[in-house]
Amino acid sequence: MKETATLWWDDALAGIRYIDQTQLPAKYTIVRCTSVDRLITAIKRLEIRGAPALGVAGGYGVALAANVCTEVSSGVFTRKVLQEAGRIRESRPTAVNLSWGVDRVLAQMLTATDVASAQKAALDEAKGIAAEDTRCCHAIGDYGAALLPDPCTVLTHCNAGALACSTWGTALGVARSAVVAGKHVKVIACETRPLLQGARLTAWELARDGIDVTVITDSTAAHIMRTGKIDAVIVGADRITGDAVFNKIGTYMHAVCARHHHIPFYVAAPLSTFDATRTEREVTIEERGREELAVMGNRTLIPDGVPVKNYAFDATPMGLVSAIITERGVARPPLDIGTLLSRTTSYNEP
Ligand code: MRU
Image 1 (cartoon, rainbow, N blue to C red):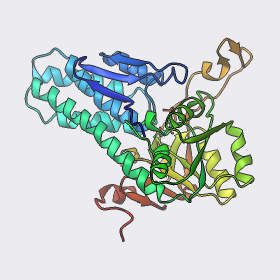
Image 2: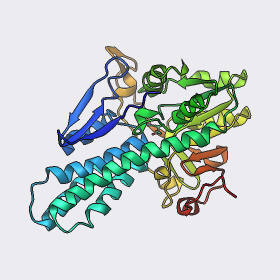
Image 3: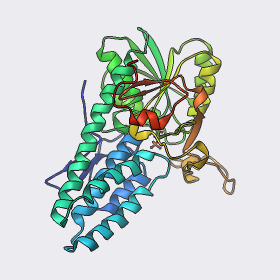
Image 4: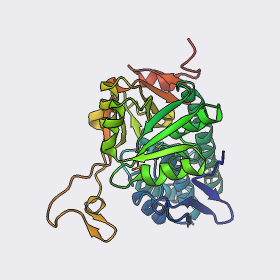
């Protein structure tokens, strides 16, 4: 199966290259990014999106800020990079991976004693985050694949695939690993209004890999769960607190339907998505612009003057989650996130 990176550091460019996800599936465009301003625009416009990919982008963003900073005094250099890191961290609020990636690279950079070694430390750490994300996704895929019956049909929401990570994917990584293990997997991709990450991105990357995928409208999900056509729901996550899973708007609706129809509801996410410091009520859910709902191509879909609510994410209470599949194994609620993060062995071991 083809493993293409979503974003990576280009040494010759001294910058980041990434697949512009707003253009898919019509166009496959690789963008060259050599400024922090451009990276922030890319994150806000969802050219780069998906929680683990945002973690990688956050890390590379700090490396870029360090790389383009021309200050020779260590003190001024550090102050400037910290400022840029703050701007990157705030470019999207819900996925905790973004600030996690930024902070992890900053921590390494701050151990250096001069500007050149700080720049190197930042870039090494950022590259390390990208490589680690791929390893995590494969581990998540293998643990998750073992949970699926053969044959099976899984329903997913949004895009928690290779495009949302460095490669492979979390929820789609489970489907990919199951296929690699010889299982017969069909994926039902919810289109995911309003930006259609399911229809555009999940369908694109699974079809490219020859994995059986069918797109449905979001509102078809309850119907096909009720008619017995779904064996499991698998989604990714943008932040996991002890009491809730934050993911693309609509995820909660699928979790309620899955519980009603006795279908397991799995969340596949690396530990970088866990937030031990907050509860559901303390997390900011991003709200996005009216135009995402009101305009489609040249058509106006909502009368002028009528307001909209465009939440990008929702919170699924932990009680509706059957299991969380991480790179260290399968954790079943109730969860003590502090303990999960401190474990170094597989959760599957007694
Ligand atoms: O707004 P997006 O496209 O960044 O939202 C992405 C999602 O909600 C994904 O499901 C989530 O980040 C998990 S990605 C492995």
